[in-house]
Length: 208
Image 1 (cartoon, helix red, strand yellow):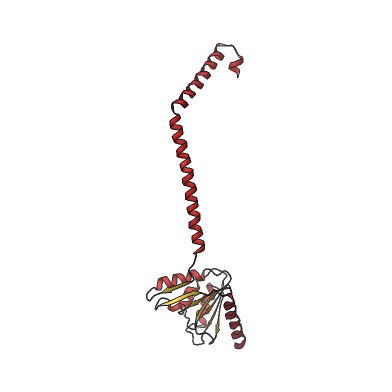
Image 2: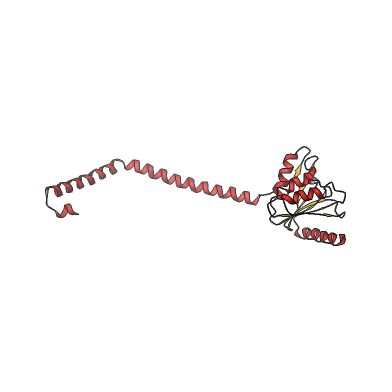
């Protein structure tokens, strides 16, 4: 703007330089028009590719959410590590409390239950002839409170109940998982879960 107003030699030279710069810019754009078009096409293809990729990722995440967990799982003899891995993952889902109905429990059962989240209480219903001693329970509570053990003969099968609303039918005692072929099934009917819990309450009242 100053070069257009002033009339000095410097101002005139600046005006010439500005004009030359615009001429060079126009020549550069004209000579490289094809290159700019190629770059524009590449950018468009990149945007299209990104859109397709995002759509595929959404489909993948949607599939994962819909198939997050199988309702049934069977383990064959020798799959001890896999069975214990699944049981631990189920135990760690509990946020408030865990109820385990298992006629045969011992220290190996506690080794699984100690993987629970902190502040999650555990109640075990088992047979009176359990191999779990009062000393075992006391040691567990010293580090992973709180564990209560009740006794009942009303159940033959094993059940793992999380937060009083999610229940699994377990075909083998937790301590023996993977030693022989057994299955784990999610109980779909919430009414059945509540029936089991009510039965446990009756068992507890009868014991007193």
